[in-house]
Image 1 (cartoon, rainbow, N blue to C red):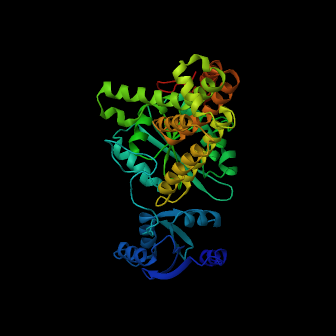
Image 2: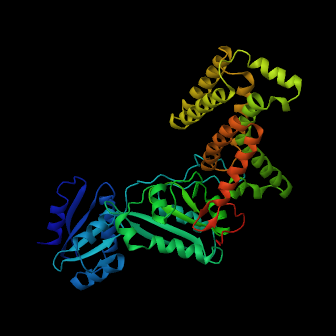
Image 3: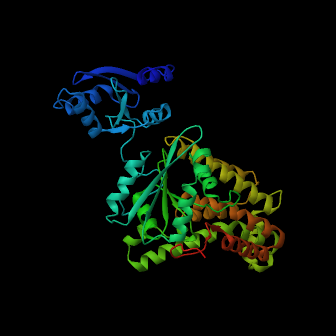
Length: 443
């Protein structure tokens, strides 16, 4: 059975598979590919132009095909199908059953460079990564004019093949970190058994714990943040069809330091970072302090303030802990709805919903006015952190301090803060402490 016939039978159920026969130099050839991925008319025209002056001898035709493409020595069916799935055009020289893999003119399947959706670059280039891995690597290569910038691509998949690319700056990244990442990415067992399509798959590949609240990676949409991570000794991983870069490992400094800070004077940059630290502390401590000062330790307040708070809660029918917990959950639901709803109606619905719920809850004497102020201030303060994933981490920690404050008052609030700090100090990613502020070098 000829190779062309074998391909036709293998893809008999695929309507987008196309096999055309033509003559080049007097020899019959078969062109195979997916019309959903390849522009066949333009690719055929390009191929005719390249082979126009190739003469009529069979040997010269084979030499020209080898020059503009890659000869597949084995010609096995699995090798041919892998090339077709990667949007290659197969040229089968039927007299000799020789197969060549060519780069054709592809269909416009990838979107162009656009602005980031989850980041707000200030005084920085606004171009963002997209689903095209080669384009993403090219954007990094354009910004890092150095021979020390290297990347390696690995293929994973049991049911479908996907590419994972590791990028790093030699001389900046610690050799131990690079060796650990390379060993895991080049594992034959992992390459044959794991389908890499999201961050949880990557966590499994790297052998990291999936039970912690701390993010093991930091995702970034803009090349500027990825370049900063590379210069700081991190590694950047790209997964095929994911429109962002994955920075490994994630450190505590990612909460407060941003690439945009380098565009301000040093003093202003330090003030902005202090604001971010203060905002994160407010998000964790404000609800807990409200519960502890209202229900457990009201004696630490001045009489006028304690009287005003007690008056606002006079008709609230349940304890401050229940009141705070219910409103915090409602706020979480509102923020989740803001993310999931379409951009055209999401902000309007969540804004109106938040105002209506807040006003109705206060008017019905279900919550106090002060609690609305406290939760609004805490939510706004948490938004000062750099990176959406980092905010998610601290949103979980505020429930720890809230529960301890309801039990032990102000002492419980401080104990919760110490517990959170101790937890962060114990976290490691690839043996690199989470609270390490300088270049990740491990222990």
